[in-house]
Length: 162
Image (cartoon, rainbow, N blue to C red; front, side, top):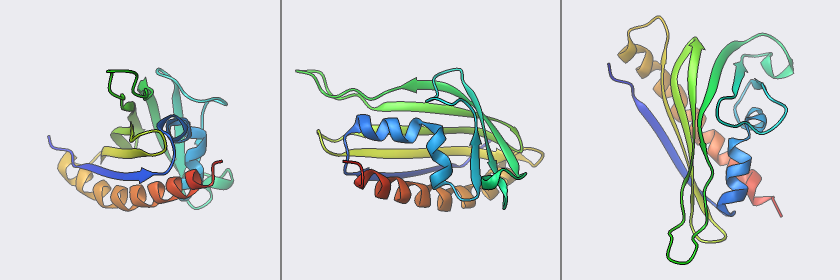
C-alpha cells in the first residue's frame, strides 16, 4: 500500500540546537498549525511520550476538534561538527495512531555551520477508513499547504530569537 510522502524544507537563520529545541517541543506547534491545540506533557517530549493535536474551528480555545494521537518514536538531537567528525542531523519521528489520521511525521534539523540550519518536516499520512491510496492522496494536499505555512512561521519566529 502506497502512502504519499509530503516533505518541505527550509533554511533558517539559527543554529541547529536552537531550531531543534523549538520545532521538536510540541507545545509550540499550536502557534504554527492553524486551528490546533496540543494536549500532552508540560515539558519537551522525549521518546515514548504520547500527545494529541486537536484541530477544529474552536480547538485552539479548548473546544472540540479532530484528535491526532501521536507517539514519539525517535528523538535524536543534532550534534555540531567536532574535529574530523561531521555535524549530525537531528531526527524526531512521531507515529500517528488515529483515530482519524494514521501514518507518521518526521522532523529533521541539519546543521549548516554555526548560524544556520535546515529544517525538513515530512508527513506520511492517510485517513483511517478509506483505501490507503485514496486517504493518502486526500491528506497530501492538505499537508503540503500546512507544512509550507508551518515552516514559514517557524522561520519567522526563529529570526526573532536573540
